[in-house]
Image 1: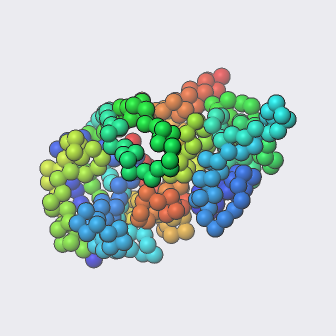
Image 2: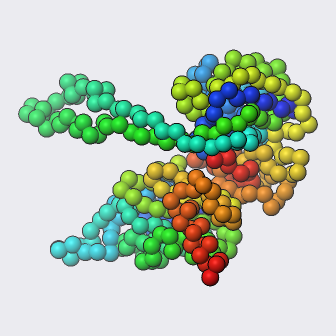
Length: 213
Length: 158
């Protein structure tokens, strides 16, 4: 295990979607894409962990500009469950109503996109395995299929920062208050500190870096 | 203390029974029908979900705009902007949950404690608005954040 700095040179603006995008979360999602098993994805991330806390920072970037982008998602009634598949009681068929077209109208989703030269992370882990996982990744963040978050190249270099606490004792990722050894005047938030980050049960009072929005 | 434990101890316990799954208790408190103070023509309490108004969950009590029949809650007629503004101006550093209700229930994934004025979080059915109350409003501030910043600027100027 060694400390590394991972830098993704960005070709297009990125959409982070309001989260921290920690490196362990990114690597776990890449492993999950290959194996399809959440447990395996979370336990085989090649990054050092202490009591469940991964030594991997949140995404760090300095936005040159911010903008919002909107997409229309069209939800079509044809995808609804066919009423013929439902078990029917005699005379009950007429009670099965077709869902209104208005329930499946267009949905407007707006995202905040950030333009930056690069996005970087600090971590302590297996450099070769991390490199192997990242080398084929061409897009990160949300709306990848729409061209956001395109990576020009990955740069992985040795570093002396472990991904938990920065050079000024500031938190580089959400760290539970009782596990944090650093600047106690740092920002305190209610945040998920271990995978699965979407699971509200994994939240605790943490010291954390400022959210990039 | 987790978000759900905090929510249940100060607010949820007045609305639902405690089980060993606090996140489900929280979901039931936010999405179930609760008896209202208002009575119908038969003289019975009507029941309704938390569909309008706001709430501020504090460590030892909860301020709520919607008038429920439940006792133990503090009912408050102020609008959400005045209530949140005064709460932030007199904040003592202990955790809070700021909630704004709407027709759809607030998903538990949108429930966050506010622990620092640099990251105030307003929870609503459509998402979570996060802003730094100690600095000027950014250009992309949300509705509530922008209003609270304006009220703060007005008070500072007066």
